[in-house]
Length: 347
Image 1 (cartoon, rainbow, N blue to C red):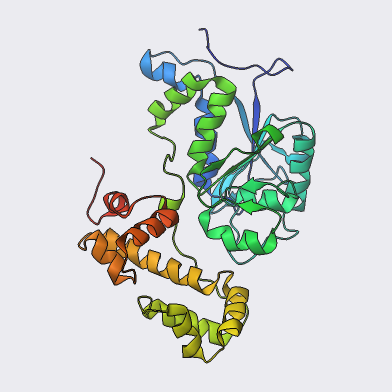
Image 2 (cartoon, rainbow, N blue to C red; image 1 turned 45 degrees about the vertical axis):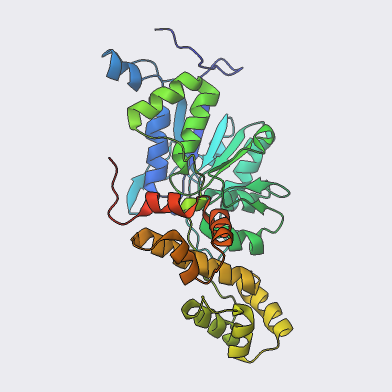
């Protein structure tokens, strides 16, 4: 069988793709990538003409050591080799490696980050999924560059990795592909990444065939429609914690920032400074975020007219509300409602 579009490396072999896993990895990401990438070229002919084709990619799992371990959900993982025996790869994919949104994994993955730097220095592509981008940031390879990761990790990147430009709207950040770096957003961004790599190494036709075999597709709307507000108050500033709790209940008031400052008895300038230190947001940014989160819930419930939703959360100007909502979610309020309205189901 002739395979169109497939690439053979300069070493005369199939492209080698290593999936980096750890106990913090989700089985759905690891084995989803493994199944889909391993099947390229083989499964589609089997499903259409009854004869399996030849697998076009050499896909295998690596970890800090070659010893079997259990990943998230107590699922068994048996690495093919340890990372120290896998420097010669074309692509290293860092699967998601869960870390709390308030805690950088400083020094936790020293073996893995050293391996990523070696692979990159040899010309290999480093790709990540979800919190795999946090591990890549730990390696230093993202310094001075932008990246995608799960939307919930914006504050962590801002605090722990200030030299990295976090792009919460991106499902795949390809701005640094020429430098051998591709980063992916939330957990199911593994599907976008898989299709992208298949198109790059095997040709667009094989990527299209893969979408048909697995009924997967790209997140064309980006990541913002799936995001939600994170409410983390750092440190022990009781006054700011009280202000945050108060605005959760009084988000629609006029002059919300002045009202918050007055509620906790702080001068506006002092309040603003302490608010940024505790939340990472300016007070008015926090107010808008609370209002947008409330608007999302009202639209998801489906009963309130769009203009009324804007008014209920504190905006008298419907045009201003729509503009802010689109900036926060990537969708118009009407489109968001169609996507999430209660009771909606795929046809």
